[in-house]
Image (cartoon, rainbow, N blue to C red):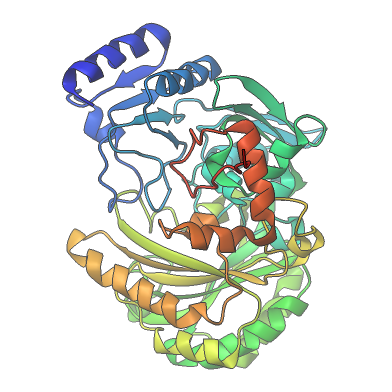
Length: 464
């Protein structure tokens, strides 16, 4: 946009909106355009920090009227930077916060600017929780619309399996409520279809009785990777659903609770979350101890929010991130051999995680929500991470090469929240048989593809 055009739109936005309007040249502009992944450097023409739903409606109308590209920002963790758009308008929801818990109905109503830490704080006061990710600073909106999986998934499914309703501002600026009874087609698409269909301004989640958990890391030396991963692939699917453990490779951070003797050592291991009684956990852990002697173990009872925030200090905003993912049905011997080959991480924060998505996730049909891969057992992410911009190429190449070596052993698609900008073929592969249905919903609610700064689902077209 030209500076004159920008000034005109800024003036108009300030007349129409209650929230803060930020444009290039404003003292807070660089801060406002900064997101979690420091690898992203985009320069919007306008950032609107919405104060309420009315602001969201006005911002969407403004962008459409002036033919501005529009991006939606919630928590700002979006890996490929799709929470921002060069020269366009960013609808920033981060000031719209608040969580209301109905403990009798076990429902939480969550505003779109909340992080999962906000939700955990509010729900844990009642001994309740819903399914979310593994870093509490993650935004509720992006994680949910992509599907959402975490420590409670084997027991309670995906985040979208616990979504019971959503308020949505559509591309034409109108407002609707989506649920199983109202706009059910939109509700189906929101559960895994990403930000393609509108701006969600409120989420309603089913809650479950989760207060304290028995959780923490167990590490083995990296040369035990083949032995332990082979055991893990056979053991995990048979484990009770109260047992959750994701497999990882990483470098041991310096600092508590890790002994100084293993600081900086590359390890493989498990991050546990057990929902049963603490006195029973030793029976759960013992098979892992028997397969190979742990180098380190720190598993104990803790409030669920403490587990959810365990990675927050290790991964603050401002690191360089490049990640790639895949769904995995089986961990073949050939795939495990590739994990061994790439086991040595390139930087202290780089890592590979295999998140279980079996159990309750499998009890939902593949066409019941937009999330297609209900038969996958793991969601894998390979994350190259480092605070130093000079390491950007190193972490990117490691993640790409590792992923390329494993992709042929995967189910084909990926969790969209673990994708960079990888093109339409990858998006179609992720939604599989659900893609055409998603296109039809897109054509109904956003026929002009106003919301396309995302892992985009193109609207269905009809022949004249």
